[in-house]
Length: 458
Image (cartoon, rainbow, N blue to C red; front, side, top):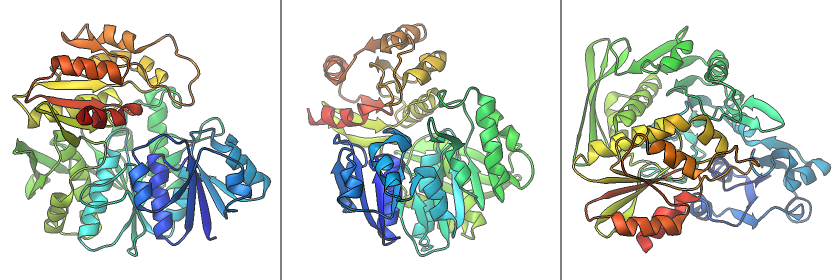
């Protein structure tokens, strides 16, 4: 196999695997829609050729790949390029299955969880890389600050990857994507009810995590997360703030845009760490990363050094610039738990500043299922601007809900909530409300990732 073609290559998980494949020596091409994605710059840096839009000729007439990897978006296996590949007898594979296949010859460190898996995976990759282990990794983000591209083919024995609970190919293969992995070390940051289009309940999500644990050798479990109690059985190490955790975070402090935390094991202090990312939730992510790296043979000193090199990932509290004296950030938070945690972290770093949260809801199904939780998730923001809902490509119904619905519900709990359907309306509101010294954070998983840059650029 020499040539691999990625259908929907601009997706964050697809781009990371494409970069890995390019570094592994494969001839890599891809296709996607023409709009800019958070991965556009990454793919350009990796010098990967991308065909604009989808066309069967990208398969049969131009490149003739040996393997076609596709994503659940853009029609999945019904995408015209995938259909053409199968008609020509070219092997095809959904992304999750392909990732598991490429990981199989390495020692696998898989990071699963409804929230925090991207950051935790990137932390582990950064620490191992700076300790000269030369691991492979595939992280679903545009860039890892302090490390580089989101995918890497390393000569070392480890492969670190996100383990995503979403289904392999919506409408065709409901296997959770992470079940294609067989981890030597599995990290579970938490379990929450997300993806209501794929799971009917929290219990269904928990069942998927239990199945992943059954094919893992060692599981690191967040002892503070009640939903993760289903994993408290054999071959488990626990971490958290609670005293019942084997590895306990005993202190967290903040100052000069740094997070400080102390780690103990069974009551005995182990080490003091410093992070360049905010929030108690990131101290918890770093704790999981530290334990995983320690199990792989690193010293606490090596781990601490690696943490100082880690400066976050693209779209995770990413500093974009300043405008009118306000600091502007971009963040991927799109679930109530993530919004609450991120705004709490911003408040901890900037306790005396006004915080303005601009949130674009992502998918009608998620917004409707978690409406009450979304409404109460902005407590740490001084002002909240909510936009129209950004629909998934798989959605055809609004389910009787809109951005205005979320505004009305949020206004029951927050005094300063505004509706601005699109970027132009958001820009107008921010111009009216922003003061020098404010902190503005754009949040969401839809098209909002371009808004922060557009706002700073004026």
